[in-house]
Image: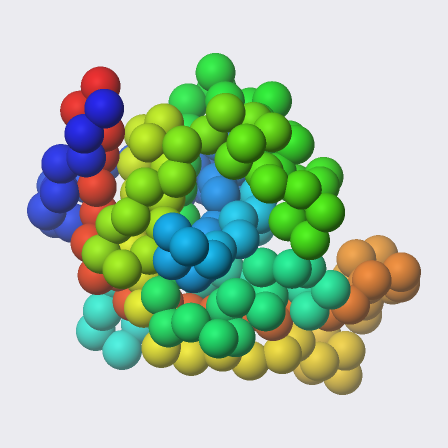
Length: 169
């Protein structure tokens, strides 16, 4: 398996499917020290004249610490064949286990960050903005109790897309 860098203007995808239906692994750190988590919430678009991805991470997640300490993160999208591995990565903490070892995912270095050899598409991003969500800023107040009654609010991380890779497999 080898990754080929893709021109962002040639990217053909439905971001709604890519994020909410396909899920993705959000990863930060380097090969010696990283963490990854499964996400199904995010946004893709243009801000400050740059193609960008926004990821949402609760402060209670182990990956949060990595995002706070590192400027880079990857968003790695997988085929349906890896749904079980992504489910594992979303339901287990990297504090307690080695997710790659447990799932058979193979970590690889890409542009100073980490992805996985089995990913079909990888976005390498550099943080450009981060902000904690605040309950008082919700216009649909029911979302506070619906999504945050028993866990921490999300912090949003906007990352400019530095590179996109597709797996040639």
